[in-house]
Image (tube, rainbow, N blue to C red):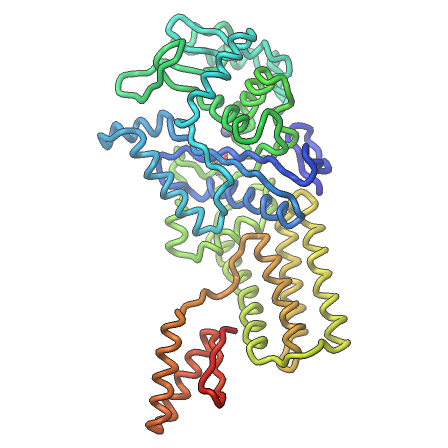
Length: 469
Ligand code: AMP
Ligand code: ZN
């Protein structure tokens, strides 16, 4: 399995630190509003990476934080006249609803920045003790960027080249820094803001230290994969590397993965630019699986432009898979038991080869666009090679294959079980009563209604039996 590593700018063979296990950290959203579909891109992409790794047999420890203390959260809390945690808790709950709708599985752990302050203070103290950080007169703690010799290795930036531009960025209030490149680890509170006590001042952590600490606590000093959107490469991830490696003395993450932007009219979708759709807007108009399909229709490192046309194409693509699945389920409902024929055995082998082809696409830096094409090839194969008269065993193999590949992509392609057992029993009783009253039209109507929902009736000597297709 090859992964493009932002650190080396190359596709590299994936070799985990511990055989069979993956330690993966994905930077999560700042929770002050409903998430937009740009934020949904890393969620869907890295959830698919996780699912694929599990398919390959890895045990994945997947950690993704919520940034629940931040200027934007505090601003919103002041506007609404509530505590900051009322805002963050509200939008964490909303974000989790959106994730569930998009079939993004919950992380192994979703740490909250506000619950990890102790660890942040410890890491900051270590950095001060090692000479990598210093306390300014007002209690702000800064990271001494030039003390970390490899600073710039992820974003491939050179401090000396950057220097001219950066100096002009020095704004008033920042002149207590030793150097323009130094960044905040801890800052003093302002009136009305949430704060924690610390040896330096009552205040709160900087954003970058949060992820260094949460990653260390839940995954250890050295992890396999650290991921997020490409806007996080600099300065967020560059700063995380500096903090973690300076404090722990170990390589922080072996592979750095970054998704490209979701754009609108070729511009990054963002809250600040105002050119965004929330996930909630979209799932009001489309099945959330259409959104997921749309996201996976491009390689994660390619920019993706949101448009109604592409969403329509995604809707049609998804529908083709769903139709093949429901046809198979229908055929299985009335298929004969018994051994597969020789022809079926050969076809079943051919069907299985699509899994190998799918894996080949995903092994090449998670090429979901090609992987979806393989699913379509399998759909075509199913449409050509599944019919009434095939054995149940053969049809079941085809169904298992297509459900397996869809599930690795996190696409739900089976029709929901709409009827509860009690509803079915009630309809069967009504059908029996209709037959007794010689109302055969109604009895047939009920049978067909149930069949459409995948419920098959069998009239036996012991009475009516039913099963789900
Ligand atoms: P934020 O809440 O802004 O920190 O964003 C949470 C995650 O969404 C980060 O990994 C960002 O890089 C990512 N992100 C934000 N906007 C976009 C976008 N338009 N396209 C792709 N990823 C994005
Ligand atoms: Zn982060």
